[in-house]
Structure formats: structure tokens, C-alpha cells
Image 1 (cartoon, rainbow, N blue to C red):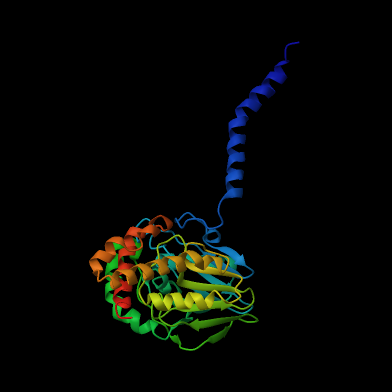
Image 2 (tube, rainbow, N blue to C red):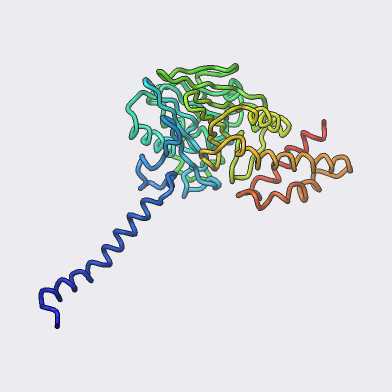
Length: 330
């Protein structure tokens, strides 16, 4: 029996609708499976810029990349902790523009005052977003050696990174030094929520500071922990290994690294970095014992680690050079 005209119309209508329904279904599936840590392009909403990794604890994952206009300096992790009365920000990104995105994300989640902006160390990709928070008049917090180290490198940091990002992406970026220096373990109260700040001995830099949220056991390690991104040594390889050895013995629920991650189990998260540092130290010691030169060391030390890290060729030789200079005086 042939279909009636009305049935044929319904079939044609359905067939015309199928592509649109498939597109809608694909979009729904894509949204459902989209990573929580989205990229930082301007069209990304503030809510997508961060993810809640523990109750009241939020983290943003920066890109594994070098400074470039396309990423606007968004190459490191950042985050914030929300108490009953106030917010503490931990690192602010690599430009004022990225800091502003983080600020917008905070405001999309809570209207509470931003009482503290904490920098885990002095490197530009972690502190250059500070300017976006000046209007909130928070305490800018850092290791007691941070101000000295950042001030000494300020002109160089500003020049190099402005050139890398370009005028537009770098606009508004400036150095904002700490107003609260941490020299001993210090507790900050966000209202019913305490966070513990612990200055470290020279490791990744000479001004590393970790932030512990006592309520959830979450620890922001800054660049004391790298994941995926090749480590960068700007302090002491021996000190860095010692700090990691101490921290891996402590009960910590999760950590936020300075790069990669951004929420990782502990102590497993430390294993690749600790291995990388040990390989470099062992091989350099063998080179020194054999009376090999720094030049020879940079051509061979640690190459077995190349496949384990992104941006290896951008940072590894620098790490070998710094470690060689330290270890030849053991």
C-alpha cells in the first residue's frame, strides 16, 4: 500500500531534520566529554577557565608552551581557595590579560573579597598577572627572598616577555612585588578555612613557597613540581631533590603542579621529576669524575629523558649547565 501524502510529508520532514539532530547530538556528546580544563582563548567563558578540584579549591591549567602571542602568556597553572569570608589566589599567570581572566573566573564563582594574592616563586609566568588584582587591594604574598630576586631581574623579565608576547598581549603587565614576606611557616585565615604557607630552602629557585589547604589536603607546589613540561632549574639540583624527598613522605591528598596536571595524586606525581633530577646528577658526577668538560656534558647528559618531557630541547641544556656548575664544587 503506497504511503499517504501526509506520511510522505512526515518522512521528508524527518529526513531534512536528521542532519540538524545529528549535529545537536554531536554537540551534546562533545560538551559532555570536553575536558574540565579548557583552553584560554577569549571566547572561553570565565567558568570554563578553572575547575573545582576539591571543595572550594579551584585550579586553572596553563598550556604546555613557550611564551607566544597566541597563548598570551598562559603557560603555567594558577588557582584560588574560597573560605567563608575571603579568597586567596595562588599564582596569576604570565600577563595582565591572563590575570584578568583568572579574576573574572573568581568573580563568576564568588563575590567574596580577594584578600591574598600568593606567588609561589618569582618567575614571570606565575607573577605577571598580579596587576589584574591591584584594584582589589589584597596583600601580595611571597617568599621573603622573592622581592629581591624579582627586582634584580625585573627589567630583563619585562623586556624578554614583552618581545615574546607582543604589545597587545603584554598590555598592562608590570611587576607587582610582595607586600607580605613569608620567612617562617605562616597560617592565613579565609574565614573558617586556614591555609598554611611554607617557605622552602633553595630548590627550583631560592624563593619557592608552597600553599597547603588544611581543609582538603590540597597543596599548591608551584614549580617545585613539573608534569609533562620539562623542568627548569634556577636554584639548586641538590636542594630540589632534598625538598622532594621531604615532601613525598608527607600525607597529602592532591597537589597542583606549576605546569601540567593540574590536580595530581601524591607522592606518585613527584616520581618522574625526581627521576629526571637524579639522572642528571648521576651522569654529571660521572662526567666530572672522568674530567669531562661542561661542553661535553651538555651534549650527552640526560638525553635518555628526552621522550619523557615536552619542551625538552628548550630547557634541558640549561639545566645541565646549572647542575654542572653546582656539582663540580661538591
